[in-house]
Image (cartoon, rainbow over all chains, first blue to last red; front, side, top):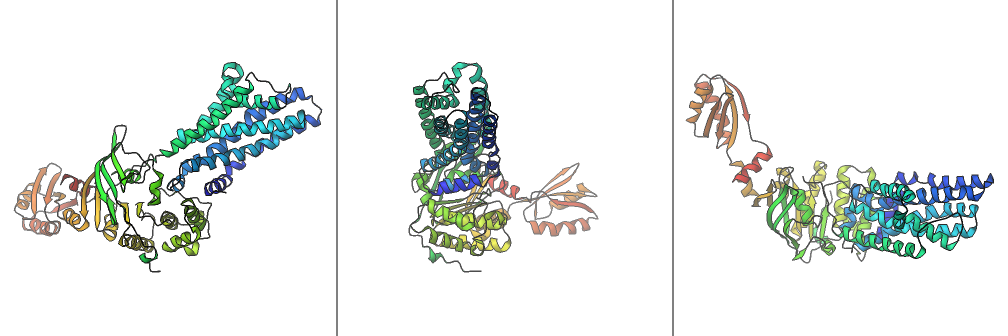
Length: 236
Length: 316
């Protein structure tokens, strides 16, 4: 494990706000188990729990908190300077952090969404949802990591994207769905395990290409921004 | 206290940090205005009141801020957007930022590993010994006092034995013993041929550590060179006093005859007296007042703040 990965992981798990996220996946599993045990038809509880809660809330919110935390928290408290005063090419700082963010988000979402998908339909759907969520976690993490270098309020901006763009506009203005990570995840999962529980207007090739573009593009942007990282606001 | 030996880590090569016409502004505010200096081996103090632009200048030297105009180079290479300079440069920033969840040893070892040093554990132990933190090295930094955190940060910045070390207000929060130890450490590093620059707004700190100073006032380089010369300039500047008495007019006339007085202004609120020699004037005033039967009600030195000393240098 690289030193950057180690410091990032220790910093992430050492912060309390990370623990506050664990109830979200737990709620997802609890709701799925409850509906299944009560014998509710999967067509009734599947879309709101799998998509409405799992893909529209749990995945992006976890990725937001973790993705902005791996670098943003260090920028906020100034400890990032310790890593930056090293003769490391900046990609060697961004990539380990992206890996930690993606890994933690993917692992935390994949397990509950797998359980929920399995209960709603099949192991195949559970696996498809987990795999697609992991790819989604990569795209979200790259986006939110870059945001923590582009703005001083990455969490706020990230929430605006998730709630307003993906949540509100995605529901009413179908055109915005093309640029919605949530819809790409749905398209990818639906392709691997076709089911009536998932529906999207975005095609699979579009989802694949855009996921890759977002992951690569925002990572490259983060590397470039980190190269010109300035310590601002202290002029004593 | 252990003796700090510069021989433990000999600096083979020396480095020069060059600033050529460097300015930095934020919108309409000019933080650093056309500063040129060359820093070579030895300890240099960057002296100036708060808000003078010292930190902005240090950040530009350390590659954490782009100059709006001019160039900052380390041995000819720009420091901005060039991480390879950190092989030769160490920075201890003013902000107290440490990974509090790590122990000092883990923290310094992480620095050594990030520098890809051949034997990171040995380098970490050496750096921790240099700042005398061995006793507490296995405790979490979160439990440290401010001075101990500062030393942990210095150890992390020294772990790769850099030729250039920049420290922003390194003595803040240190007790006298830690301060003395840090001063000795900086001295020995400077004597071993390293280029050390530290900023401070406290004259005495600079006096004790460095022979060479760069004085910044309001974003400009006000003076630079040998500390003693600058200190003399500071001591010999005119002193201004506000005086109130039972008869300001008569006192003004009497003071004009005093050799230590260079000027007197009479206003409704009292006298403003300029004296060339601080001691001579304060000794002469009671005598003059007594001789003329005047009672002095108030005597206030008007410009004894460090800021006014700096302003004077700037005008000079």
